[in-house]
Length: 99
Length: 163
Image (cartoon, rainbow over all chains, first blue to last red; front, side, top):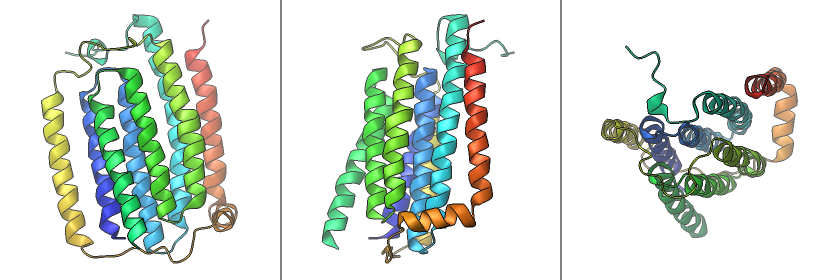
């Protein structure tokens, strides 16, 4: 297996996540795009761990999974609070600080 | 050797199509379901790279907990179930240009750097290797991640409670 297959797959997932995080209106969909980005990074970590026969790649990926879980929990709590106060999670309407 | 390449091809095709659909579909629940396909594909990639523990943890934590959390979030924020008029904001074309440019840069760098480099996982990264590593070399980050999870738990409860 070529190393580049895994890395370019990771790059494609990363760029798809970047597009989603920039272009989507619903806050939950933005969080899903961030999950795509984190998974792309994990693929990279584990591919290089297998390439260099180093277990650190897997260990780092496990830490990334744990931190991603924590981030999704807090992110969705914030989204729920926004919904409770404004009755909508449309990110184009959250512009109080806009000049 | 050939079975690995076929498996990778199928997984990569499914993941790329599903990731594209996550960011372009007009139905929020469908986006969550396409995300499940992407996450399951990532677990399959981990198995191809002989990272067995990471694959199982990926399925348990990501598909089993995080996607369920997303579905709860969709339900509790009354996202319209079904087609919604427009789920993209007005900067989608600039975002598309940014994403394509980023992919071009990353792709060219990767092809330049790792052309014809093969990865053959000679030894399986077994669970015992991961456990030995976490509890000896990386025990401090392990404890810190536990505290991060505790802080996230308390923070989420405090942010989202009604008072």
